[in-house]
Amino acid sequence: MRDADVVIVGAGAAGLSLAYWLCEPRPGGRALTVVLVDAPRGPLRPPERTWCFWEAAGGPYDPVLAASWDRLRVRGPRGDTTVGRTAPLRYKMLRSRAFETLVGERLSGPHGCRRIEAAVEWVRDVPGGAALYGHDAAGGPVALTARWVFDSRPPPRLPPARTTLLQHFRGWFVRTERPSFDPGVADLMDFRTPQPAHGLSFGYVLPLAQDEALVEYTEFSREVLDGPGYDRALRHYTEEILGLGAMRVTASEHGVIPMTDARFPRRVGRSVFRVGAAGGATRPSTGYTFAAVQREARAVAADLLAGRPVRLRPPYPARARAMDAVLLRALDTGRVDGAEFFTGLFRHVPTKRLLRFLDGRSRIAEDLLIGLRTPVTPMLRTVAELPRLPWRPSP
Image (cartoon, rainbow, N blue to C red):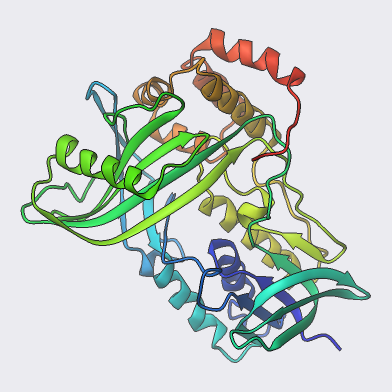
């Protein structure tokens, strides 16, 4: 006898989202038993983090959003500014603690969903389903069997790729002594930061009030910085570029997101799947993941609740993945200046169309129009080069 219909490993964005949709109250409908397995408190459990995405107003997570905006601003290296309106979409900011609380309310309902803590050591197929084994915070054994297991843990090593960059960042939640922010506009990319010798850097400002914001320093490059390096970059950005004056840092966050054209396996057994970033849900050219995770979670839940076999669709169409591979290689070789590239896109392409493109949901005609706004010769040279490049193990 199985312990559950579905076991979800990991309570990050992918695991929480899948649990949210699988445990949606359905009076009179099909109900599944679901176990969400989260790592015990300690090094395996990530600290509180922030997820951003764009969608129409009235989304399911709107009641617990930290903030949202209908205007996005991009600043070029020389200070030139482009502001675009996102209507009918909004750019939304969701904090992981608020999302966990929302999902926890569903898991505590009377419909066969629960959450446990365990460090999972292995997941494998067994006759009639899948099994996992691990240990709890006290070291005691934890064993579960299920018809399906969805594993959202990061893989120990990335699959082979032709190009791999890292999007790495540190953010400060700051409170200033004087009004310093416009709560109606989010700064998506501010390229006034000193650019590294390889890759690109930018600032990112999400205002929560006139005197409060999340301010981040981000790089796309091959290597991460050390802790003091991020702090120096953030001090320079907040003091010299933004001119915030006296301020207090109330919290911080840090992250590293692989930007790679690697091909992530999604089904790793008859009954075992990888979901979220572990299954390739991160958009290689931007690092955005949350919107693709929502599409994936809803589709999986719809299949399971309808009694259909699970069909994991690709997070992004093949055309989008091919364009991402070209851009990553062009950035990595230095053929394309990243700051000028992204600034030009936001300057010349309507914001709503560009957001569809960045989400992998644009049409071919839109892609062609956007392509004409990029450095055509370097991009064509990269297109010709890609088929000859080897797929190497990622560092």
